[in-house]
Length: 373
Ligand SMILES: Cc1cc2nc3c(=O)[nH]c(=O)nc-3n(C[C@H](O)[C@H](O)[C@H](O)COP(=O)(O)OP(=O)(O)OC[C@H]3O[C@@H](n4cnc5c(N)ncnc54)[C@H](O)[C@@H]3O)c2cc1C
Image: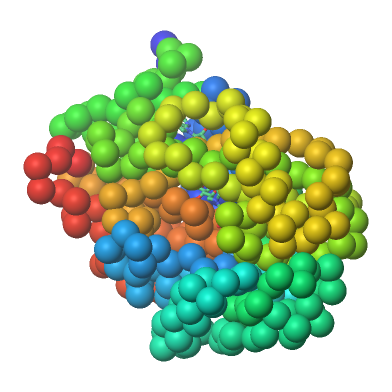
């Protein structure tokens, strides 16, 4: 066994850990990222990459939905520059697209729900509007004649999360940030709370430890973060749609090279990263073809699953736990959206600066009664 020391160790190399590492490196901090690799596949690889605060603020969970919306809107406003800087630095391509999204309704009840959502988002400062089915078809001519109305969010954007992760990794490698492929087995307590050991048998210590390890790290207290499995697929559909469509029962995201990502199911609980149910994919495809009939017989390119890091109130966890460790966890359906703002805020917190956003609503202390940290 060997012991190695770092100033700051980030456990987890998904989109949250990698963007945080880059933000800390920007500030001159000495860091290492410890990531389990394929042993614990990141949710980031499974994500569709929608950057859509107008649809994703988790009001249904009873948590701090306004704060989640503002975190998402703040991060959305950072993404254009973030994507451009990442591409310029690495020569990579992250497939950033800024032509908005449409939430679709076929029936009156769905139109009413979207109208209520539009009013709510407008009240929070968001730029969204309800449009008719015909107006939606002018934007997306391949939409079904059954689409009766749509919520148009012109400022929503998207990226390709796999390309983002590859570019972030390339960025960190160029900067000389150490990325250690290892699975952290346990972290110490008390005086040893800045030590951790890996499954591979190595022992590490760091002045500051950040847990950014997603849904199933085995390192967070039971119930604080839990997996919400999502299954998705990609089909071939070059040029059929140009923007993200959020139909009842499926979303459709056009990507580079003619791929269209269709997602996603939601199932709470399983620690199963890999299995994909044929019935789930058939359901998603049927819902997608209902919105865009041209996709009915489209060739399937790939299907996959991933585990979103859910939290009891649907909001992320960012702050310091009772053992003095920093947490950047639980971004659930929005980790890609939230990553740039999360990285700036948590990096500032770690280095004793004032975070650019108020982290109080996301503090782990909101769950602290009866927990051990
Ligand atoms: C089907 C699907 C669609 C999605 N669509 C979107 C979307 O459109 N937009 C959006 O913003 N978000 C989306 N998400 C959510 C998004 O993927 C997550 O919120 C985000 O990826 C979480 O990032 P993370 O870095 O916290 O965790 P992860 O990406 O899961 O990364 C965690 C990392 O920690 C490592 N790790 C875990 N345990 C250990 C350990 N013990 N030791 C060392 N390393 C460890 C893992 O190997 C992994 O690499 C989607 C998710 C799914 C599943």
